[in-house]
Every structure is written in structure tokens, then in C-alpha cells.
Image (tube, rainbow, N blue to C red; front, side, top):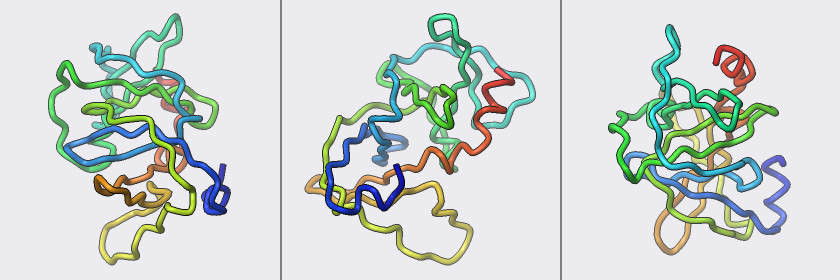
Length: 156
């Protein structure tokens, strides 16, 4: 689904989660399951955002620290942490988040464009911003965040 597909006012269903006390979300259609935190096996010589790999019912998948991927300081996992298993470019990937917020449905027309800014900001990671009564949620574009996910999964 492309950004334009939900700007027509159709429903947009998302899974919202927290990373460093900030709210983010991804489309529910990309989420395969949500698991509690479990230790991952380190992957030698991997980038700093890759925590390692886990065994998901016989399939080894990489786990990414969303804090590190988003350029934030990563807090140690705790009992509220979760691994959101998503499918990106036909590949399974685990996203370590600080906690889940909710399953939400919005009118697609409420998604606002990310404002233009100068400096070292890459807005390709975001589909837009969703403003609602409790604050704002950054709507992530997983396809752009993980363009080479197949290579990452092959390493796992």
C-alpha cells in the first residue's frame, strides 16, 4: 500500500508502540505477531542496530533495536519490552520496542506529511504524522527503513 492509498480517507489500521517515550506506528498488515522480550543470539560483525537473531518456530529471524535504527539511545530490554515481528519485502524481521501502545484505526486523511527540515534528517523513514487527542504518532515506512532486509535475513 502506498501513501496515496490511505489519503483518500479510507480506514488506516496501525499497531502503535513506544521507543524512548516516543510513539511510533506501523500498518497492522505488516505485523505477523507480537512476542514478549526474549534474549537474541548475537550476530558477529553486524551493524549496531542489529541485536542478533531469534528462532521463530524453526525460522531464524534477525532482531533490530528500533531505538538504534531510529538514531536514539537504546535502553536495556525489560519485562515491558516486546518484539514486533513484521514482514518487509517478503522477509520476516523482529523489531525490539520498549512497549506496545495499542491497535488503532484512523481515517487515512488524518495522516499529515512530515514537515520539510534542513540538516541531517531523512524523512524517508516516515509515511507521515498522525495527530490525535493523546498526542502525535510517527507513522513509519518499513519498506524504506529496511531496503536490504533480505541480505540481513540471509546473514541470520
